[in-house]
Image (cartoon, rainbow, N blue to C red):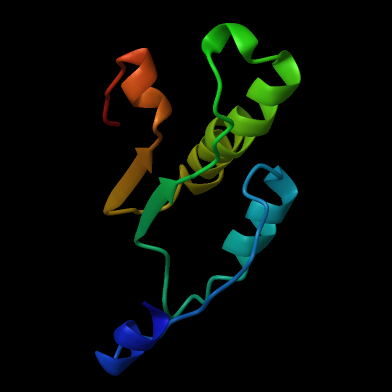
Length: 103
């Protein structure tokens, strides 16, 4: 995808970050160049631990939900004052919980 975007004239930066680590997210956002400000956030964490709900221990749930819920909350808090055109969060948990919302 990076190569395809570059071929279309897009400047692309790829950065690794533990999005569930608030300080890491703050550092990532601080590194966004002023000349190319952040205009949208799309968070689509893909963490899976298959099993029936009854078999999911607190540790297993934490391993799945931390990158989804904590990361989305950190992004929400740390981008609140930014002039974003969009803030999109997707999680497969919404299909289980039946929740769907926008903000």
